[in-house]
Image (cartoon, rainbow, N blue to C red; front, top):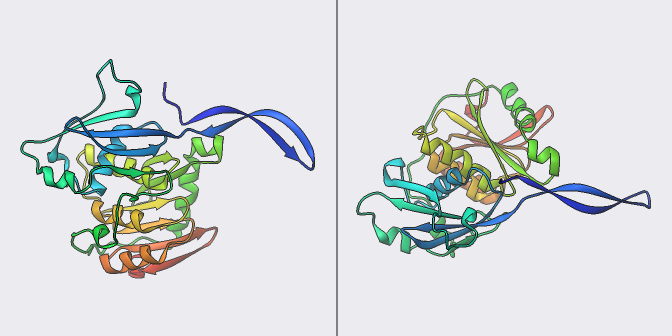
Amino acid sequence: MLTTSRPVEVTRVRNGVRDARRDYAATEEPMEIRIFGKPFAVIMRTPGRDHDLVAGFLLSEQIVHGLDEISLIRHCADPDTPNLKNIVDVTLQGEFPVSRIEERRQVVTNSSCGLCGRVTLDSLQAEVPRIDETWSVEGTAVLQWPFRLRQTQEAFERTGGMHAAGLFEASGELVDVAEDVGRHNAVDKVVGHMLLTERLPLATFALMVSGRTSFEIVQKALLARIPIVAAVSAPSTLAIQLAQESGITLIGFVRDDSYNVYSHSDRVV
């Protein structure tokens, strides 16, 4: 059975007093993605919702642009292959352009880097249109997003070592949430789930993430067509630049009764 955390033995020191006890740590394992049976990428992730993660990752890597290009996602079924639970096979539809795969083969990501396989900034730029959605959200609703997200973070509550991504409707309803040791993995799980259930583009949703907002988080939102991205911590300069250029409202430091809007603030009223 896959679990998001595992028990570990620790020595706890408080005020100079040592105490042996059992605690829980976030699970991190490698997952190999194979396309047409050939190795494509290895992702360090928290097991669970692997098919959602793979679908979201393939979308963010621009291997696929929609569900119609995915024929099958399944865990490896070869009984002679070790670690079957950590290998996912993907079959793409019809005469898929192999060049699209070859350009990105052997991507390796760790739990803190969403696009580590890229060599140059130019190769990160997504050739997609700007987001021009005009709907808005009330600032009071934005302030509730971190609390709503935290209430669902069972693995974080147990380990203190998990990130989360939540998808909110304009009404404030939390539609989906995923936890993972990597922020970008959590986003891929949420976006991948919506892709596999044929709910893309996500033009009427907002994305809330724990931690900071880096370039790849905004990139993933852009590819999923999410117009509002918020986080409890700071954005990077490159995340701000991409948000400004792509039409995404980027909100940071959503804490207590305040937040900062770094781009397209007209969507927050």
